[in-house]
Image (tube, rainbow, N blue to C red):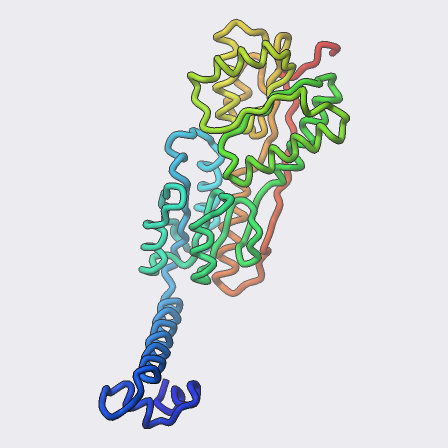
Length: 329
């Protein structure tokens, strides 16, 4: 900005601006500070705008640090989809892993302009990474949902699919359930919980007779949970994902329980290993790779100034298998 432009913006004379910036001549400290602060702010904005014009053709993908231990195929398949979409448009993918509410790596990537856009793979209740990216007005996407209109979102309706699965199981004669999900600070788990209770209310199933387990689940603790379920006459276990289902089925069979005769089991996310058990496990098939492809595609459309969908909801399929075969069938 020129001296005249600064003076006009702040409502002072050109000579006052000149004295403030040169440090020469008489000028009030308050006025000088106001002018200097304004100029510094404008320089920072111009610097950011110049950097925005320097495209890297890189997409950043941020995983939560439990990706190392969760073992879920969902994030792996999402990443493959993002990479596939990126490769088709000549983009590269940069992956970083952050701890909950620790954005050191993310901040470095953004401030050093290493990527053109960021894709978050999980949505937290109070997400520091999401808040930072929105404040920076940085192009942001999420394989999940949030209440930020600025963020490109691709997800499956986890509340609806949970409600639908539980309703189907109620129709098969099950009335006493146990819902097992992990950390409720993640939006997806709260959606699953909400769908579970909506199905109970919809089908007239008493909520007080249902069990609910949440938190950082460990395989060694599952035997205690299973004993509690059996003692309280649970008929069907609803697991939040394929990893919990795999652990649960393994411990049930190790304990000598007959599935589904003694207790049934179903998963809110399917992966290939759930069909390898005998009996195979009922699950909801979510097209994780297609979620990644859609996310990567919409992000690139946004970056290229093309038309894109701010929010996309992917279809799902409920796979009824032998683990929930009712006694009447």
